[in-house]
Length: 270
Ligand code: HH2
Image (cartoon, rainbow, N blue to C red; front, side, top):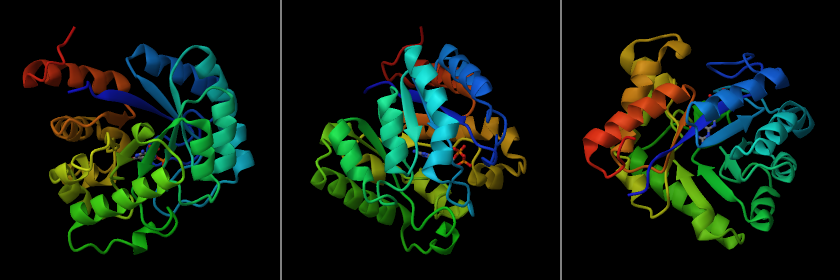
């Protein structure tokens, strides 16, 4: 089994659900990215648009103004950078300054040019499950069997990516915890993650500080949900997921090291 990689979340936004405004300034964001890498992040995921429930679209020029200087500086320093965006123009600008992964919460459905942009670049892509958009997703939460339906819909998005010319070994799938899902759906999805892991693609999981962790733990403040997030991450790691997307890199790296050493996966602690 390949070791689970840790993706640090760097939100260059005024309004992200748990850390909005903290690293809106480019200098602060670059510093935070270096710190995440020093803490053991394998990838820094840089985003300039909040996708929290009810969030409205950010135009690509505003998004690029926030993130391109940050991506350029982090890539120049040798860090592996992904760009968290739904916009093809932003994807291209980020790839041009050194990003090597596109992380699209719309699974390449939001921008008609997105799939061709990724295919042409030959970069890695994370296809995340959502229904509707962040502004409308709360109205699309009807499932008879959430894990089976998310798996089927992700499978369709992977097929569309292949049809667009994206190579199979460039694709990672993400069930999209909290996106068009009630807390109960996110819990059911996590407990049945094998549906997603059995699709034959690497799986990324982003549950850090999310609403269902607050719902299960009773912790209202998103930035106070580290302990619950770590518990969820280790549960996901037990399915052999390829990647964990986390706000608190040092804590996640430490927790994963201990879990690897104890779970006997061969991913020994140093
Ligand atoms: N979650 C968020 C954003 N991007 N990408 C992937 N692949 N998976 C996720 O679960 C995911 C994601 C939302 O978290 P965050 O970036 O912290 O918040 P916001 O969208 O408010 O900036």
